[in-house]
Each structure stands twice: as C-alpha cells, then as structure tokens.
Length: 373
Ligand code: KG4
Ligand code: ZN
Image (cartoon, rainbow, N blue to C red):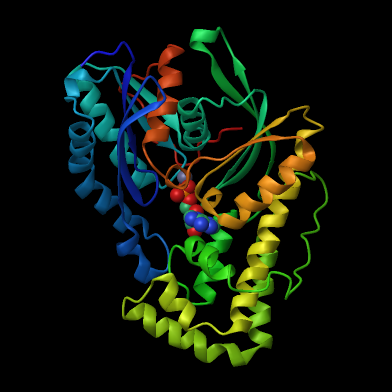
C-alpha cells in the first residue's frame, strides 16, 4: 500500500486503556483500537496500577495486531512506530514502550517517543486537518484529563515541512486534575468509575444553580486551577445532609450488582442529588472556561484548543462555545471518541515529530513524570 503518506503505528498504554492505531499522513485514521480496562478497575473505584500493567501485557499484542489488520496493511508497511513515553503509570507505560522498541527493532523501523499530553493536542489537530478547518497558531491549549489540567501556549517552530509545536506553561492545577475531581465526587456519591461520563449525563437533570460553591481563591498565577476545594465542599455538603445517605447506599448496592449505567443510577438519585451533581459540574466547567478564555488576550492568541477526557463533557463544550463567541475566539475540540485516551492521537503527534527528524534509539525509557511545559 503506497499513497505517499507516511504510515505511523501509534501505541498508547499510559493509564487504563491499551490502544493502537494506524494514521496516514498525520491526519487520516486508518484504524484506532482502544481496549478499555474500565470493567476491571470499576469495582475498586479507580485505576489499580498493578492490575493495569497486567492487563496491558495481556492486551498489547492483540490490540496492535487488530489495528494493523483493520488498517488493511501489514507491519512491514509502517513507516515509523510512535509510542507514549510519559506521563502516566510507570508499569503501564513500560508495556507500550517495551513493545514499541521490540517492534521497531524486529522490523528495522524508526521509533518516535511521544508525550501523552502532546497526543491530546494532536487529537484536535488530526480532526481539524481532516475536516479542513485548520486552527491558526499560536494558540492557547487546555489539556484537561484524569491526570492533568494544564493550560499552555503553543506555537510552531521550524521550517514548514518539519515544523513542530513548542509549548510554554500558562497555568496548571495546584492539586487535583479536573477529571480526578469528577472521579472523586462520583465515588463519594456512588456513581461508579469513571465519574465524568455519569456526572455529565445526570447533571442534565439537575439545577446547576441550586448550590453555590465558592470559587477557589489563590494567590499568584491567575491561570492556575484548584479543584480539591470543591471536592471537599461536596463532602461537607453530604455531611450536612445525612438524608442523602440512603440513596447513596442504594446506588452502592446497584453498582455492586453491576448496574452502572447512567439511567439505572439516575433512577436511584433524588432531585437534591441531581442538583448537587449539576452544581458541582457547573462550578468546575465555569472555572475551566473562565481561566482559559481569560488567557487568550494577554497571550495575544485568537485560537483555543481544548482536549483530554474532560473535553468530552457536554456542558464544558456548550459553555466554551457560548463564551468563545463573546471573546472572538476560534475554538477547537476533538470529537468525543478522540477526547479520551486513544492511540490515533499518539500516531498523529508522532508523525509531526517523525517529519521533524526526531528518532529514538533503544535506550528510550518510560518517564512517568514527563512534562509538556
Ligand atoms: O484523557 P483521559 O481518557 O485519561 C487521562 O489521560 O487521564 O481522561 C479520563 C478522565 C476521567 O477522569 C474521566 O472521568 C473524564 O476524563 N471524563 C469526563 C467525561 N468523559 C471522561 N469528565 C467529564 N465529562 C465527561 N463526559
Ligand atoms: Zn489522557
């Protein structure tokens, strides 16, 4: 198969999704396979690192095989292998990095290491290019996931054919990531794991103005975030309202029976709980939107990219879209499937680095604390 476009095999194993994808020319997704471990971690209410590594080991070979088969190619057709080298769980990352190295060595193919957070940015670029609506750079990027909440300024550097993005930090969370706050509040309310999608679905049935959570008051950088305060405020709200405990217990039992769908959980939630969920979501969404859009003017950018698992949130999308218009901002989100972890974004980010001449040798190591900016 030869279209003149470079074929990149992307591999992702930084957290609880084993993923592989083949992307042509950095923008055509030929295949994207995601084997989620949610079913395994759900009963613990969060990712158990040892179980994640073991599951990645079981899944990595069939997932890569399926990605290659669905793309209608063979491993020999691949021009390079791009693998997530960090940040993430060390044991989980090591599975992808080691398999990527082994494949590159066995096939004699170039190897590119990718920062998972840059992958999230490329999820936006990949689809924007494919859809013909290209974001103008420099841009402000909000990467908002289960492990990270990072606001950065991104600009292209280098000659056009080999240009790559470089990032400067504008702000970041000082405590919990936004997705982590969704997951922890969901755990307190017995809404299952991961919490974001269920809170998203249930919030639509509550009054987002019912409970007012105080905005985080922080000294210093106005573009930093903090979500641990709101999580604690939800905890105090539950302590002050013991009448909410019986339904929490009922949902806990439903979850133990495997009834974890949003409709089943909603049937076990009173209006008071739906109001709490909607108010929590609104507070997080308002804060993310306000700080991100406020950064555009001082950084003199007219483009904002939002990506990462929390970018799948309906209210976050609605609020950003409404506010971006007021600010004269050109706004970009990935589709929902490419918001959460996947390997197409890793292949797309790897493609840009491949074109800029980056190559790893076999000393490439997983870096759980790798930063982007
Ligand atoms: O990017 P991602 O798949 O993995 C990390 O890199 O962390 O993000 C996962 C996070 C979880 O915290 C999950 O609860 C959250 O994204 N999430 C959502 C939604 N879908 C996933 N949060 C809010 N609303 C959603 N619809
Ligand atoms: Zn992620």
